[in-house]
Image 1 (cartoon, rainbow, N blue to C red):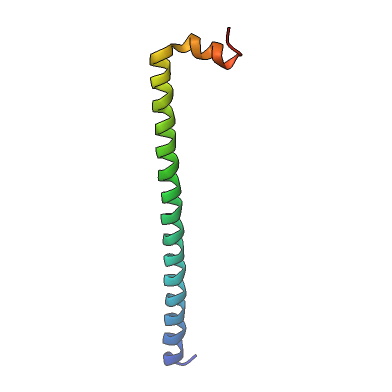
Image 2 (image 1 turned 90 degrees about the horizontal axis):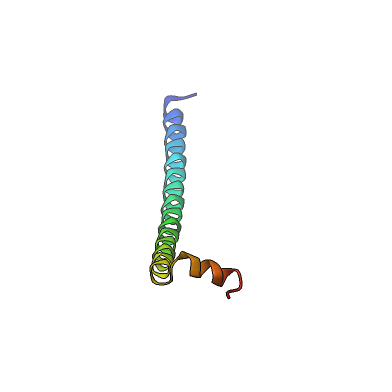
Amino acid sequence: MWPWSRSRVEAEKARKQLAEAQRKAKATEERDKVIDKLIGQSMATSARLRREIARNGFSDLMQQAWGGR
């Protein structure tokens, strides 16, 4: 292989690696957004549950869940 051909092959390989790295970075960023949204929803649900337990007590929630008295 000629020296100038080798540099073209290496440059093309580097471009492909860069494109793949950029694709992975974008996928990771999107996944992080979804994870952050789920964390927020989970924290809100936990806070609502804690407030409900503090207000009604755990036994009242159990009775409601099982059909109430």
